[in-house]
Image 1 (tube, rainbow, N blue to C red):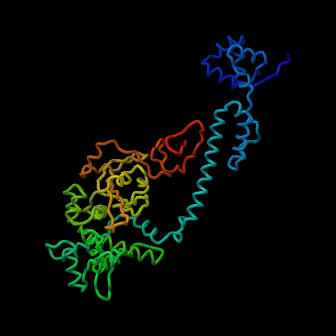
Image 2 (cartoon, helix red, strand yellow; image 1 turned 90 degrees about the vertical axis):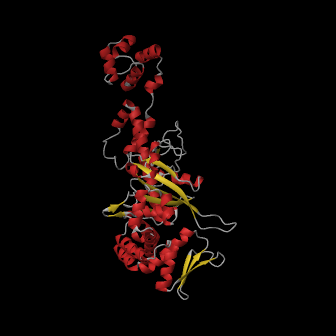
Image 3 (spheres, rainbow, N blue to C red; image 1 turned 180 degrees about the horizontal axis):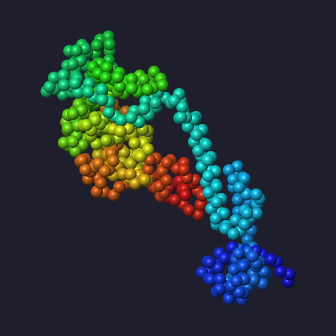
Length: 469
């Protein structure tokens, strides 16, 4: 029988290692010397037909495994190294043949990695095109004015010094012994000649507040709760009494359009209204005394839960600062309505878009306060407090508007909070957002991560519909 030389040293070595044999033991069984077996494994001697038959007889080795074709992986390796990034690395295909034969597992891993790289590049290209199509390209002119306002306010601290000082000074002039709404009504009537009227739903069906300059009357919808009515009155009073302070703060903000500038004025008036309803020093003192119990604070100052929570994000006066809180509000569909922070909303560290956050669970328990500790992938932890907020009253047949609010702070600061007992429970592992989170085995995952390829291994199925490696 004419001998056919076959060089398959690396494959023989893998067979020997899989059987946990030394070269001496295998050489003895094959009736050759250990040094000769060593030469075979280093592809310096061929595997003869006699040796192949001996391997099949002694170790029941499939001869096709030793003669197995590398064409499949070799072709895929050629595709990898044909990429412009690698095309100049190899002078020819011989090294690829050697890699495919000597280290097929490494070759398979290289192919899988290249496939993941190509899929990720394609996904990022699609994402870029989608963002551009929806007006989210990183160009100022491509943003809506409201988006520009939100981004500006989210990045900066929630404290506005001029407004705070003016609001405290103005609140001190209001008659004592009256609640906020009554005091502001008296001021509007005495100083500006404006009367406040509560209108029924059928007269003002789709507005919260309207100021009629001709009759000098401020109309408030009866749909609103007493706390929200007081807030709307405070917004009107702040617009009139605190205008210089609002203008000064507005001048410090830079916007690309007159519309964004105009919307910013409305937002600063709402912030000023909160400062009027909850004067800085009085509210800070009460917050510390109650250990930041939002329910107690809203009752004491006659405001809503949402307004008290928002006010906590604004207490960063130099020398008289509170715990730095941040806040996010969403609707039942998950749309983000607002974000704020005492030091700017911590988008990079917190994100706020994880479906495992208690702000989403709050919709299942309306009116209940949910407190828990959450931990990010990098180990950063936060205390989060969530609760639903009820919108205006509705007529029969209308669907109520309900949103949820989350207020949080760094978990290291919980000693001064009434909600600190939540840290006794195991923290909830969350991420910044599904698209950016690489936590595996997440039952709540709603979207695949843009940083990982999906379905690379057909033999594995994960806990979510978006398997990745």
